[in-house]
Image 1 (tube, rainbow, N blue to C red):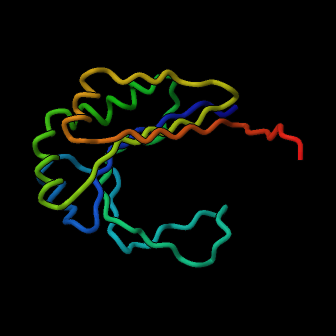
Image 2 (image 1 turned 30 degrees about the vertical axis):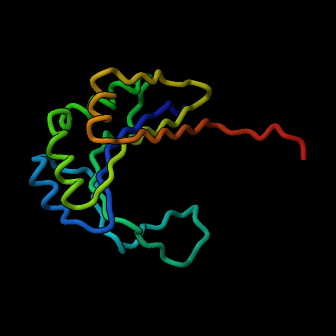
Length: 148
């Protein structure tokens, strides 16, 4: 039986910027990076034969997908390394015209949903760096109960 999974990641993104300089400034190794113009890897479920290209450059720090019923666990894995870096992030944003955001992705299985709580320290940090929160929820299995 599949279990509910959670992934949290923080992304610094923009038109084009030196990823190595961001890594060096933060002193944190990203879990994923890509450059504007890179080909997006295809997944078997996609029907398109045409290649798709990245529209921006990004530096991401992610928890990866983990079985969880508490988003705080994954949030802390990403937040703790970043929490003292607000001034550095703001300088990088200014220097390279970047934006940043926290992404929270929840894959719920069989109606088992995790708790989602952001503490004051996390919200304060997000405010300091002007990071939004993008929350995606996927409920599996999905059964369409609408009549045609």
